[in-house]
Image (cartoon, rainbow, N blue to C red; front, side, top):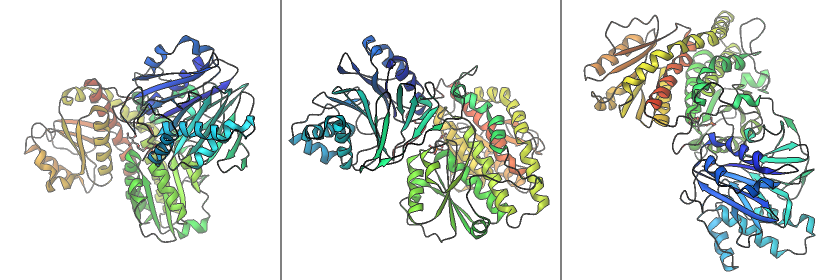
Length: 616
Ligand code: F6R
């Protein structure tokens, strides 16, 4: 989704800003722009399409500038066009602004400013804010000069309803930058004789590893040597400088063609990193340093509510099966966007758990805030250290899966599922799960990285199957019990990167409607487990075959499928049930990836999608 990068320092913005912007490309965008104070004047360039186009069109003169802001836009208000791209200029030409978020009362602000003679070149909500800043600047000449720029931004924000991460520059203050946040992330990069700001830490780490995560309703005034933080209501705030602990090379492609491919193959490591140091010495349970739950609080929990969106929501569905099975605690799974506006009755011993890769998804963050407002204890499972969700929760578990750049989530998903399995073990062992059963699960989990590596050996076979099925326009994914969420995830992966219409269903539900879709034109992918459900799933496979539907089946090696029962069989290693959702996900991800490649799709930047969804 929209990305911001800003710079004020002693170096030239050229490489620093555009490189930062390139590092935000993975988030999804449709246009981009840059503004700089060059030759004492505010200048800007905006382009529809890729950052490469912006880079090629940016005048060379900008390279000497030492103050600038830039932006990638994902359209919300108004069409994809150069006029609507950011930065936006105030109509007096003095200020430029980039904005993430939504100004909800922009029509009122715009009407007011129109009566004062301000004019608008775009359809965006953001342009009203830059004009409001110009208005407040003009209105208050008595404010002493050093802080007049900062105060005009602060005053304007007091009138804004909605969410924002903003960065503002002014030709009247060529060596300064003002930025602020509410509901939309913003991070300061602290360098030597330079400061950067960005909406995502990835856009900063090529210049510095020292960062300050801003909190909601904070405003910052920066120059090359110094910066000061205060709240929008003008209370000064102490900055806490933290060090980013990941290696920037993790965010680079290396020998892989796409980030999605790289991240699929990183799964053995990501899983290993997520479990490291989290098993008890006696090998019978898991523990997590950051949960902040006392043994008494742990005992009192009598209901868990998981909230998330998209792929992370599918991880929650698996948590529901696992926690109910191993810990016997009732679990509910809610779409964060629905939970937030529903007045769901919860009791005081309910624990809310948010799952989010980015830690910035606005629906999940808002649902979490709503739960906190009502007094519930909140935890998160999250892959982004210092993210808004991580900071909002009472406690949490970091995934340590490394940065995920591909828009389609892969390694973050399997890592979330693994941590949910470990959470089920942790809750289970604090209740009725026996020592012996705990040890068996720990032994199984420790084999996971190796079994994941082995499952990746199906790649070549999956690639061939992908070629055979890439031309279909519809596809069903079917599975029972813990395989049902994987069916949902398989359908989501396929549709988001290959634009094939796909649906996931519990296999038995097929007879209640979706079977009407089955024909030679609609293949099905069955996710099959051994055990009590096997014969029933086999019956469902036969129902599809009887209607001429092609069947791809993914199953553990020991699954006793009759010869010729399916058209294509992908075998994964035999493993403890608790591992199967993760192992099954690997061929499902590979299938979507190779089908998308066959169809010539841009796998890492699928159309209309954003990596981190920071607007409602
Ligand atoms: C799909 C995908 C999305 C995200 C969803 C939540 O591949 O990545 O469905 O899972 O937007 O994002 P996070 O986990 O960052 O909250």
